[in-house]
Amino acid sequence: MTFRWLDRWGPLAGALGVMSFVIAILLYGNGPKDDDQKIVAYFAKDAHQTKYLVAFYFFFAAFLLMLVFLTALRALLIEAEGEPGRLTALAFAGGVASAVLLLAANAFFAAPAITAKDSDKFKLDPNTYRFINDTGYVFFITGVMAAVLMVAATSVIALKTGVFPRWFAWVGFLVGATFLVAFFFVPIFVLWGWILVASGYMLLSTRRTAPPAAQSAG
Image 1 (spheres, rainbow, N blue to C red):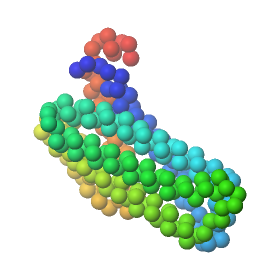
Image 2: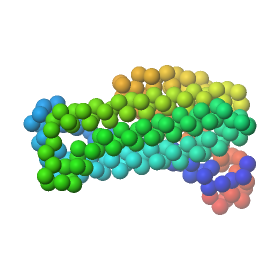
Image 3: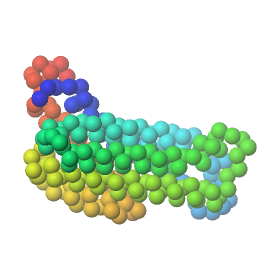
Image 4: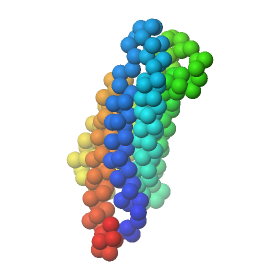
């Protein structure tokens, strides 16, 4: 296997994505209480607007990094599966769909704060906020559910080819099952946990298979 820069940075992108996502979630926090006056007062504060804006960028970075990770995962899977790589295509498509939907969710989550920061004339209606926030959460749930294709297809390829350990493949089916109840929110952390473990294994595998000159250069 030729040692390419993406062989290393792709898996690392997955790990960095985990860090970015955790920071984003901590910054977003629980948001305002479900009370009309508290919602309006919350987004009227410049500190809260800025916090949401920073969270938006970390969330955005997390799923861009996930896309970089997906390119490395796709390369690994297609090499193991061989052409035409239908299962690899399913895994890649599921991952991309998941990332795109979650990026859309992020836009909805941040929209009230960004609009309030952008215009002094903006008056936030509490029911409009509830609609936008819940719409974002629907995108969020759908994005996590879409990742079931990525995890399940990767598990099948792993069982057929040994590209990942068998235990990781079987755990992957359980992981994918949790995505179907993504409205509980916890499965998003399960998804990032799966990415983190996959990233670590891919990085270690790359180090083992890289030519000596490439390893010493890295």
